[in-house]
Structure formats: C-alpha cells, structure tokens
Image (cartoon, rainbow, N blue to C red):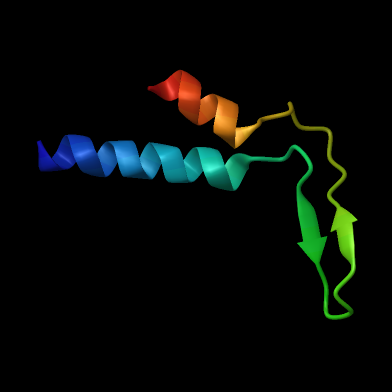
Length: 52
C-alpha cells in the first residue's frame, strides 16, 4: 500500500518535471524565455489526468 502510494507520487512528479509545453526558464534578469526543444510535447496536467 505505501509502496503503491510512493510510486504514484513519483510517477506524477516525473510527469510534472517532464512537462515541456509552454515551459520557461527564468534567468537572473527575470526574463521568461520559452524553452525550445525537439522533444515530443508533454502537458503534465493532461498526462496526470490520463494517468488516473
């Protein structure tokens, strides 16, 4: 039971950290620059919804 809950928290956290849709980097000058990459788009909110 506890391991199942730990796995769920870990999986959701990994989804949130992998989110790259409208992702931004805030630098020292407070510029919110969009991250540009060639990875497949992942929206963590939708992925979390699909997970459950």
